[in-house]
Image (cartoon, rainbow, N blue to C red; front, side, top):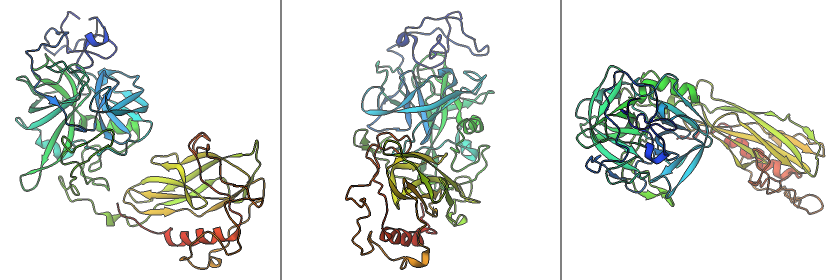
Amino acid sequence: MDGSALHASHGSACLARAVSCAALGIALGAVPVVAHAQVAPLSVDPDPSAVYGGQPVQPCGWPTSVSMEGSCTGTLVHPEVVVYAQHCGLGFGSVRLGDSTNGTGRSVPTEFCRIYEGGGPGTGRDVAVCKLAEPVTDVEIVPPLMGCEASILQQGREVVIVGFGETDDGNYGIKYEATAEFGFINGNDEAFLGGGGVDSCQGDSGGPVYVRLPSADGGDDAWRVFGITSYGSGCGGGGYYSMMHISMAWIEEQVGIDITPCHDADGTWAPGPGCDEFPMDPAGAGGNWNDGCDPGPLGGAAAVCGAAFDPSTDPDPPTVIVSAPMDLQRFESSGGQASVDIVVDADDGTGYGVASVELLIDGEAFPNGLRMTPPWEWSAGFPKGTFVLGARATDLVGNVGESAPIVIGVDEDPEPLPTADTTGGSGESGSGSGDGDDDDHDDDGTDSALPQDTDPRTGGTDGCGCAARRGGGGWLAMLGLLAVTRRARRRA
């Protein structure tokens, strides 16, 4: 490369709008040149006269804009999915939620990251994706712009660029926002926007551009995210952005998750249960990362490209069974415990899908036993005693289904549960049958609860409050509860 550049690349030479070469200590070198791009020499140090038109976000502002370990910016588009730029590369072990790269906030580990092969600046496919190892459940998601919504991307439309990159006042690593005007879409399906001192810069690569949809009455409605920061010809002069919806089918294929709650991946209007309650003010909702960000006002059911979702189209709860271990299976302990692998199968039939499965032991929710994605599997150590295993599944509409219970024994033969007609009715409650037996203790008076260092997934250190059940009264209360809730429905 002859000294011209499209800004800076993560882990290689200067290319596009990743972390600056000065920040990484990287010299210019030979990299593929996008032949059609007209570029200007890179100024390694930000030019203080080149104002990028932004300011720091308010506390908790644009919370779905995340830092990719300080070198790039990304967008949380689903509790488990972050989209960023292909030219930022791989190897991100975590993403950071917060208002800066090293201040308040928190880091979330990634399960894997993948880049679009053959993509990059100038291709319209400068896109990559990370699947998180754990879901982010306390941030309201701004969904991707899809389908007919993309028609609002017209010249002069106000959009908001967000990133952690270089600024005109030298605040690299601080989340900034800048309001720009949409320019045009080129032949590579890239959007050009900004200019006149309003722009993204080094370190903003992969970061989002947001746009607010007009409501039916001509006012403003909820927000969408459409841009992936890619490259430009100098900070302040405007830049090019890959458009997220162009690569949506690839993104969803990589992570195995539907991240478009109102559309199919091809843009067809197909509203599901999640097609509602999108943030109306992600820039200024308030709160802080230490005590919790305030989501602010949320919109109602979206009906931008067609009729809103009707929850009555999915009236049935999911089916759920404990497929392993077998009912009445006996385990022998070793070192005071028996390791038991628990597998649950859950299916929503013709409904919208299973949202979560929760493990139940002796009728109680198992600590850390909630799973948001399959496989629905747990592993735990059980002491001597008899235990009842079950599971509760919730679908995306909010319908709840509960499995039939099974019984296992450790160092003793488990006995079948009483049939439903021996329970004394579904309204019965309490934990005893009147025989004075304490179901949470063995006959010698010792506590038979699972050890507090038992993790439901690994047998590790997250605790379990499960108790071995020996008396009939415990079964009566639990079976009565099952009779009430097995076909119960709960609306989201």
